[in-house]
Image 1 (cartoon, protein in one colour):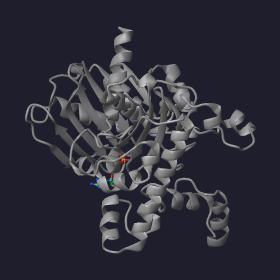
Image 2 (tube, rainbow, N blue to C red; image 1 turned 90 degrees about the vertical axis):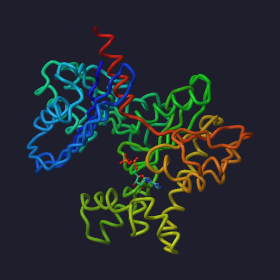
Image 3 (spheres, rainbow, N blue to C red; image 1 turned 90 degrees about the horizontal axis):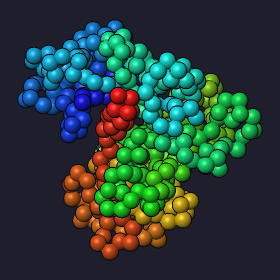
Image 4 (cartoon, protein in one colour; image 1 turned 180 degrees about the vertical axis):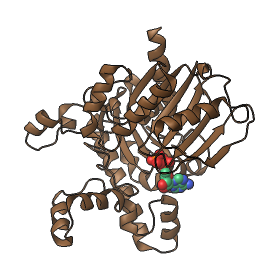
Length: 401
Ligand code: ADP
């Protein structure tokens, strides 16, 4: 069975076609500038076909999907002969609110529930809905499945997800912590258990997803019990350009003193803050490391502040779970920056986590980077959200048949 995995943004659409007989990726690609021009990069990964990359007009997501299907079937760049070789579509959907604690087959009722979640994720959910409708328009009645970023965290307790504001705002609007990156944290939990050779149900794990967006997740017996992102993805750790947790009093102070309105203030907190805002150099940790090495004090401060924020979270999650068997680093920074991992692990001996400097510096895809005698383990595991989406889609579609 071949599953098409779609991650639709407001003007972009990422895709992978995965052959589920052995879970290998047949092709992947990215449509960009949808509605404002158009660009497609399509990479066939089987059959030795060349990469296609060009500016092409993509007026809407439907046109983008149609072009993707055409490329997937084309003689020059294709990996399938006919659209009927795509058996189902799995969509990444950012927000499932409290309605979805797991992935679902998309029906009219599910579409209505997704629309109800739009106020919770006004930038992301409309794009995801557009992607689903575009697939329906181009591929007719093909089974489609929604996989939510928030679903994994629906196991958090009220004490972990409730904000101390008047309770009526939870009752009226469902203002609470939701958390994101759930698909990644779920994958990391399962892979970490597999690498430990122990059942997930007996483990206390901390997943550290550190990329452009970063979040930590405490996973007790396979269930998310806490995570650092909140009602929105701006919360928790400082990130590339997002501020993470700050004192809300700062918002009024900045608005009054800088003459800003709320939209401009939030734009600054989302797009001009984090390690970019602190350093004035870049949101990319490679640039920050290079600048810090050259004596740039603010770049060094940005890195120190990030490390400290992660260390504090790891400590609090270890206490929340009354122990930790393993922590796992993933995503762009977590997978590729031994310096960041080393800086974070410096103080974790008190939790029984000891980093092996040599293993940490050795390049490898999946690895245990703790010392041989470390009581608890430290891993690096590349995340694979697309594979989780494809697996959920396969499971749900197979159960329907
Ligand atoms: P996204 O959240 O957009 O999926 P990624 O998980 O791809 O992001 O992470 C992107 C980030 O990873 C970049 O901003 C960069 O800071 C970081 N990164 C990638 N490679 C390295 C590296 N070798 N060293 C340090 N940071 C890296």
